[in-house]
Each structure stands twice: as C-alpha cells, then as structure tokens.
Image (cartoon, rainbow, N blue to C red; front, side, top):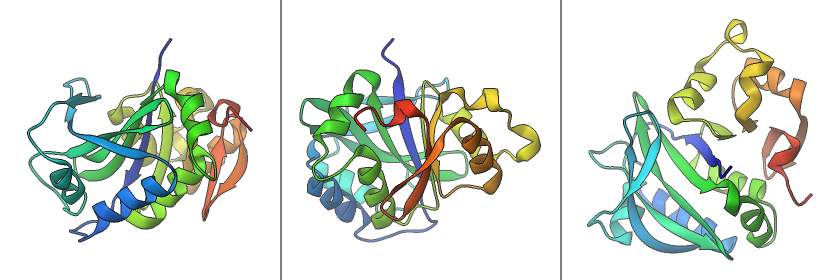
Length: 202
C-alpha cells in the first residue's frame, strides 16, 4: 500500500520576509531540487491535494513569507528519484509548513538527502522557519494530525499513535505517549521520538 506521509510544522504567526527563500536554500543544501509551483488544497475530506496553479516558483517562495492568504502555494521537488511537495497550508486557525511524499519515495528520499538523513532535513527546515511544533505521520489526514497536536493526556491512547512516525517540539503529553512505542533520536537541535519505520536506512 502506497501510504501518504505528511510532516507538519506549525509556523509562527505573522509575516516573515525571506522565510521562503531560506527554506528553499535549506532544501537545496540537502540536495532537494525545486521543480514546479503547485497549489496545496484541502480535498474536502481534510486531506491535502496537489493542484496545478498559474503561480510561478517566485510566487511559491513568497507564499511562505505570508502569515496567511487566499491560496497556499508551494512547489514540487526531487531528491534523487524521489518526489515530494512542500508548501504552506492553512487549516482552521493554524498555518503550517507541510512536507508531503509517498511511501514509495520514502526509502529513496532518506538515501538521497545529502549529508544526513530525512530527519536532519526536517530539523534544518524547522530551524530556518522557526516552527513551533513538528509532527510526522503516515496514512493520516491533516485534521487527525492537528487533533493529535491539540489533544491532552486524557485524550491520547497508545492505539491512536499507530500512524504517527515521529514528533518533536510538541507537548509533553504527546511526547510521553510516543515514548511508549519508540525511542528518542536526535536530529539537528530537535529530539524526535520515532518508530523503527521512520528511519529505514539506519
């Protein structure tokens, strides 16, 4: 089954001039090359679809600088043979950075990242964009992912974590529950709690 992976980072409120270019440069440093602009759209089932757009790559980079907007525009990228998409995404009152790729690209993506692992790439993006929360999950829609971030200790059960691969910089309740099913590993300045399948080549 070709499951979808989502990495969500909650962005700080307000505009951040230059943030999009810093993200693009961080991706380039790890060998992730920008291709074409793409719109990230709520598909009506609280998932994220990639749609064609008239926006340019310049527009996509600038979209990351805004604290909000009528259209979330990012870009498709490649690392080796792996494809992924990255862009800002607004869900309810939250605006975040979303990294989106398929299970079939996961192992290749982790291998193709230059000078590190996929977790190192995630940590580098978090650092340049100042994200306040980071969570990585597979086979989970955005609504469920956000609900996981907002849950307190009485609302989280080990079974709820079936699709959560890694978390970092989130509330203590979620981190404590993640430690039931995974061990802590470091990447950059972040401390992740990861399942074994979140690190296929290590």
